[in-house]
Image 1 (spheres, rainbow, N blue to C red):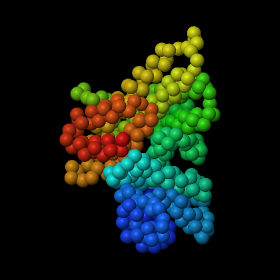
Image 2: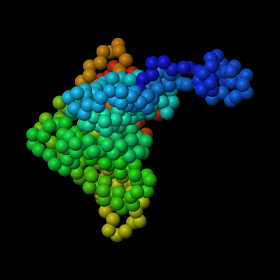
Image 3: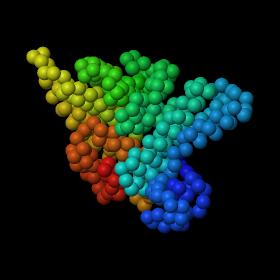
Image 4: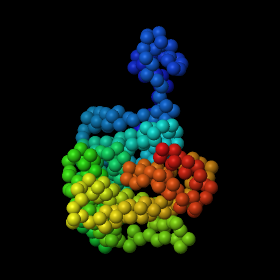
Amino acid sequence: MASIRASPACGNCRSRRIKCNLLRPRCSQCARAGLDCTGYRSQSDLLFRDQTKSTIRKVHTSTTNHSTCRSLVAINPTFDVEELAQKSTLQMITCDNHLSSHAWQNHVHGAAAFLSHLCSTHGLPASPVKEIIEICYTTTLACLISGKAVPHFLLELPGHFGASPTSSQDDEDPLLSAMRLFAIMGTLVTMRGLANQGFFTPNQLVVLATQSDQVLQNWASSLPTSWTYHELPKGPQYIYRDGWYARMWNYYRLARILANRIIIDNFDMLSPSPGDNFESHDYSYATISLLAQDIYASLPFMFNSEQMPATSLPLSAALFFTTTLLQALLELTDRAALIQDWSYPACEVLGERFTFTKGIVMQNLQ
């Protein structure tokens, strides 16, 4: 989370709680004490610090010092996704190296930890459901990028909301549809994270990923008409009901890309046999390419729908979503192709007003 004040002193002076004169390559205090100066924080580190632990500690203190109330009406937590996006995006703008370009994950994991604490102490929050769903997806992106499993309590949330990965209704609430999609995507990310630890054989992964890809296609085919989108004749641009639907469709595409990436990676590890289906292998490559192009064609609508003033910094949910989504795609697709292709539709539609935004995104893809 954002830090109000952060000391620019070197690591030794901060730990010794003494004044640092900030000299380089070694401050006077370290030189006088004969210590190796541990260096200074970057500009982005001065702006932001991960305060997950302190946030949880404060919440825990407040709940233990007061009478516990488990009523969903009594507790009214706030999960301001716009604020989370703005803080993370500001950090992206000030990033000066590869590590700081991924520092947004600190904010996301902090929000997920806070949600976990609320669920364990007060039960499932009754609202705001849409914001909780956004936290689930963004945390899953962070886990995909870092190669970790999705926290178990997040994977259980769809069931608590009454969303089943395999059931649907013609008039289903869009939030339940989004939760059903998250259940599938979260399971795939967890599968990939556990595979890195040797929990599955390549053959098991190919079978499970193939089944997941089919479940995802069934999810898309069973959606209510409110999810319908169309392509402009002049393209390349997809038009959605609003930005939220655009994000959900792109999560669907990313989940299918992940499933097919798992199929490809593990198919290549299997010993060739006469019964191998190489057509399915080639199908996965083609599917990844097409879905990636669909994601790129969705970006102009997302930026247009927010109507950011030309004179303001683009501290928007669209910029945050685009950057985090592309960082996840870098883990699953060809880097050179992504860097070359992702911005073409947005540049065609938005023109020069997309130049600054494109620069920020590119800075965080290096």
